[in-house]
Length: 276
Image (cartoon, rainbow, N blue to C red; front, side):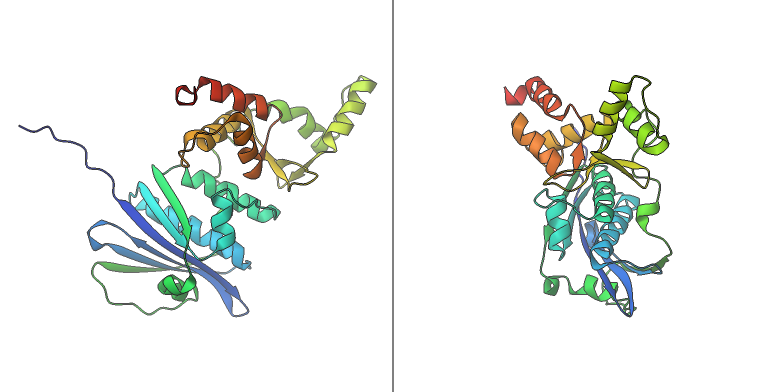
């Protein structure tokens, strides 16, 4: 008898496109799975979005659809160079709202066993482009399903962003309390230091960000969030083992910050057997 082995999960292909113009906005999603299964989704947004937001909304909706259908490996095609390069780490998300989309998308992507994203010309993604413009025509095809839906608020508002939203703020606590409530240490010298330190930070929509001189706002992370980011960037979806300095740079380029960033990266590298 030959031993039975678990069937290797197949890669599902997602095509996504977001569109926003004077006539309205929406997103088109095509999910192609095993056995010629194809699901098409046409989303209409009843809220205002930019083209870049629409592209992220298309991605988030596509990831949700893929997860609901049991996909474990996903390859995503988009004509949005900005979004693709941001998620691949080549571009920084400078716009505050796009930073939020970036963080939410990164979190959703981490739930899959494997994820790749690549830019394709719009002419190679015509059906998703058509669906994003709210077309209701159905192209003949085997096992094909079209879902039409209206979103009344951004997927960004769904409270599934981070499992550790309610955890202790750790190093951020004193900064948060000062910026939010004006709380300062009783000692005058410590109070002065707190004012100077807090000037480098800002709270946006109940999230703490660090201001940068030559960089955009960096999202501040708790200890557990930082550990997760280090693991992902070092050996996660990128499957890339890099040095401590390179890894710290990648973390910053991804839009994250915590005070022990460099030493934590160094410590993680030293514990990695494959890097020794």
